[in-house]
Image: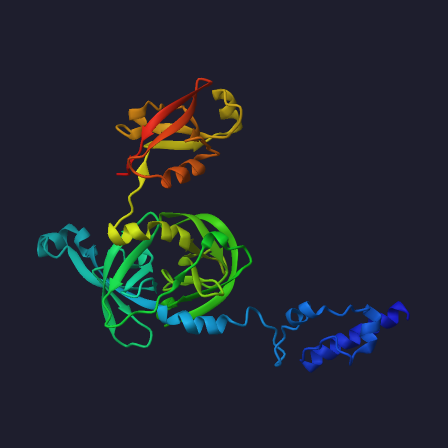
Amino acid sequence: MKRKTIISMIAVLVIGIMLGGGVVTYGSNLPFLRDILEVVEPSSSAESAYHTVASSGAAVVGPDNIADMVEKVSTSVVYIETTVNVTTNNPFFNDPFFREFFGDSEQTQTHVQTGMGTGSIISANGYILTNYHVVEGASTVSVKLVGSNDSLPAKVIGYDDELDLAVIKIEADHQLPVLALGNSDSTRVGEWVVAIGNPYGLDHTVTAGVISAKERPITIEGRGYKNLIQTDAAINPGNSGGPLLNTQGQVIAINTAVNVQAQGIGFAIPINTAKDVLDQLINQGKVTRPWVGVYLQDLSADMADYLGASSTQGSLVREIVAGSPASKSGIQKGDIILSIDGQKIKDSTTLTSTISKMKVGQKIKITILREKKELTLTVTLEQKP
């Protein structure tokens, strides 16, 4: 068959599909197309995967179990409302005339602001995981359960500003449904995820998307986040603190921020980060961190050459905090930290991550490069002030 004839027949087919508005598969009703394109029949194992086209003609955009999963877990997602007492200066009192006439007693004004967020029930007796910025500075915190018009008072049990995580607790007259915590380390870019929350106060909104990146460091409103999961599932104000779920209904991250300068990019704190500190937040009310007391800097090639290092591996000590464990152990400004307890240090991020997994009071061996000679010093970790 001539090439022009083939192209014409395909064009007619495409136009027909567009005008008809239906979905056409390569069935036996199109034998000429089968012959032209020499279509290979799919194997039986691939048949069901290929035919993911709804009978209505709409292609399925995600796993068909998402609706069932959402229905199962949504009762474990709660609406959080807060009030904050805010004191502001009366702008009229910037004028000396007003201050002289009215006195100083009316210079400040106090008013109440309300806030909202989302939380995940993590225990049947009422512990709820959310973002710290949802409850930060709150005078009152209340929680509304799914299916209830009444709000329950909540108490902030523990929080960590650095990780932007908080645990609050409510007292209910029944056992609460609990969300399963997954493993964020095993997630992959491209996986389907679902966010549940209360964006702009709209009760229980569900959005779906994929994980678009992992280990993202960003800074939002002065707070530096590390190792965030990036997703294109819509996350808006009010979603903060809510769960980012995999298709099995497990929490793999806590929704925390949206990039207002981009379209469709949100960020979430990996659940493994939260799991590492949950016990401390519940039992101690805060996170206790080990501390060395040094300011660090990554090595450039020129810097490594100047200091006599064979590579840019390691972390340069830029400053020492007076009275810190580092100063007590003899670490000096200009030292290059090469390893901790035999574990090689790639850069400053590796060093801080390694220290964060250790305990207060633990003695560690730090190998440094000083004046082209390696030294090993013992450092006793202290609690970060």
